[in-house]
Image (cartoon, rainbow, N blue to C red):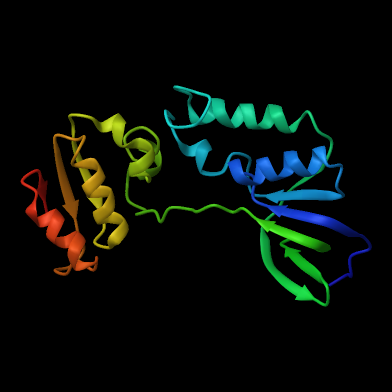
Length: 198
């Protein structure tokens, strides 16, 4: 692998809200940096309706992503659409390897957010953001008064179920196998609700 010819101050990995904010601050400070990401917007770009983002009472994920892009375009810095394979410490520097190149920098900000684990079932991709959601905190109000299903038996699934039961008409918790793996206190709360079926 070819050794990088340039050492920059900063590499930001990820271009969701946190990575974009870091890039704007770095650009305003006129740092020698660049941004590496697979996409602009991160998980926000997958959301159909957003009602909990400061400054907007309502905005779609597509619109908010466009606003991010517009804000970024006010500043001149390099953005690389690549996948980071690994980050390694090399002396006082960091070596950042992507699927295309290797870079050296003094500081790394990892703002990769999270990627929901998908079910990979028929219709999931088609209805993502239009009935299929991965964030009860973000999207629960969209399901007010409706019957909803939550898939999973771990803490995250049960916490989502308990959030949704306050808003939805009925929550169906779909668990693979016969055991719920979540903490006993969450299991007790779920089983105590008349509006949750397992």
